[in-house]
Image 1 (cartoon, rainbow, N blue to C red):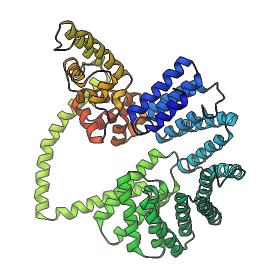
Image 2: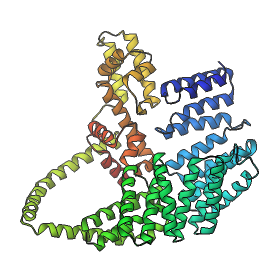
Image 3: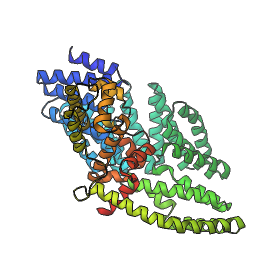
Image 4: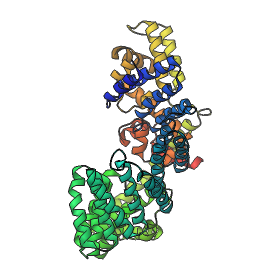
Length: 542
């Protein structure tokens, strides 16, 4: 097959991981045989794509191989695209400086071979500076540079999407800088271009952005009309972030009109979407200050406490995830003041509860329970610390579970003693060697892994594979995979301190688990401590 045929087959099987990986390997094998560096780069790129969502660290490793084999070639896309996509993956890990370094390398490479892609990269840098770093004025200069370039192109043809993307960036920057007239100019120009090219998505986005701009200009009725028109369409196309933005600006508009009930309704919808998405940007958090003040005014302490708690959680996430701390955080609430108010509310609610006879009885029972529980907790903490030390300092303390080399040693002893039931010894040897490579490659991190997939990968059947794992690893297939993931998590949490700032769900995704609960359960099953405790103690050690 030609390289183009293999490449086309790869994309025809999009969504089928196993088939796409097989085509990528065919491409790589052909490139290795032909000794063509740029083809090797393309092959590694096809593999990297498969890991962008679930295993970004692995994807970055493959992109590094793309860069290695394409560095000295004057290819139109490589290594520029590899640098650029590596930067995007680094951004998602909040590694801003490293991401910008890779964007700059992408610029240099593209400037030599592909001027169109150079401006694509410039756009990515502008978005990063505007949205992640808060460097709006620098972003604006980049957008203006890109605008001039695309005006020389077929901006209603092949370049229409790129051009409208730049127009939106310009409008958004001017909105952040409170230059409402320029914002309106670029929103209108963008909407016109999107209408001519029949780009429905950008028609909606420019209309919403202008609605938000009208809120800032205090033209609240005009803003409401604009946002109400686009909101149903945004819901229909499941554009969640802009649905959230719509509810936020509706809340702001109703606030400006003095309609408290509708303002509250919309800010509560923002909160509901945040709880589902678990993501929000600084632009959309001022609704929480409105909700806090509103429930304080009507003396609903429970609701007030609820939104203070949520707001403080968001504050913590934003400080961790954004290199700049948007001024809106400081403007809306002084965090120490908010913390004090939260404590006062808790005390007030406790006092109210304790006035009832039932409350007093519960309190007495609680004190008795805490006394007994305190002793239990003390002993438990000692046990936890001992288990933690056993993991981190294995040279001085014997670990509860045998390391992988011990597993292999026991397995080989069993084979030598002829303890394998019904499988040729040579086959067991081969399977154990393949499993060792499987572990080394980190293939166990794939979320959708099954014994059937592994059996196919190792060129065996599920019966043999299950029996070899049971008899040589001393565990079921599921326990074997989970233990490998947990051991990998232990190593990565120690060598990559930034991972300790991730949520449990993010860590679960990183290490191949489907949920935070399954990650925590597997971790505790293997080491008899919870991952949260392990991370906390690691932080104390540094």
